[in-house]
Every structure is written in C-alpha cells, then in structure tokens.
Image 1 (tube, rainbow, N blue to C red):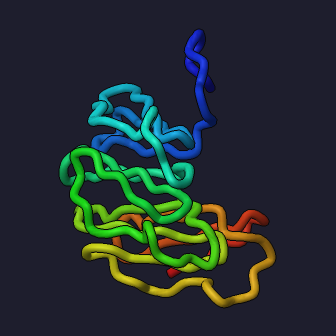
Image 2 (cartoon, one colour):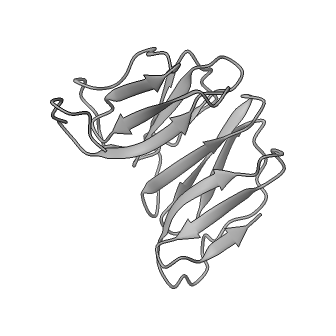
Length: 161
C-alpha cells in the first residue's frame, strides 16, 4: 500500500523488518528508503546516481541499520558494516535479492540464475547457479536460526540450503 498523498519516484522493490519486529523499511528501485513504526532512517541512495537499480535490502540486527543491494551487486551500507560487494565484477545474471545473518556479521546475494555470493561470516552452503531452472530465481530468505537459506523461483520452486 502506498502512503496516501506521497507519490513515489520509483516502485518499491524490497522490505526489511526492524530487529524488534515493531517497524520496517521499504526500499524503492532508486534507493529511496521509507520508514514505518520504530524503523530509523540512516540514509539512502535516493536522489544519487546509481549504476544499476536497487533490487533489495536487509536489516542489520547488530546495529539496527540496513543494506541496499543493486542488480549489479553493488552494496550500500547505512549504519551497517560493509563486508564486500559484486559491484564492478562480472555477473552472468543480475542480483535479485539478499539476506543477512542474524548476528549482522555478513550477508548474501542471489542472482536470477540461482548463483549465491556470500560476504563476511555468511557461509556458502550451495546454489542453483549452473543448474536448469523452470523459472528464474526472484529472491532469498535466511533461515531463522542463521544456519541456512532458501532461494525462491518465479514459478514457486523453493531451493533449501
């Protein structure tokens, strides 16, 4: 649902919950951040030049900050540590989503071909990269205990790691 009376410059492409679950952030493809509940605004890429559009975000439970990820794998940290990115590196397919560790000590990206890229303490547990997919991967989610992740395809297929 849009905020009444507040037109968006670009569509919303991602969402993340605050660590206490009492608020959330929405991110638009231009990097603009919208806060709700107890979510704090720490900055955004809105109004700044981007090489590629933002496609997702994740909250940092350790600092209360957040990360934005672009389709080229560029990462933008706001009150959250930078662990690395794929920005400026060759990608077979664009990044479509990200997740973060419950400790805040790392994050992962997923590309539409199912390739997974891990940073910080986020361990690589597998991917669908190089596999035949019935539909492109469209997102990912971290397991609540931090010991795995799921990838989801546009046709509803779920891949567990």
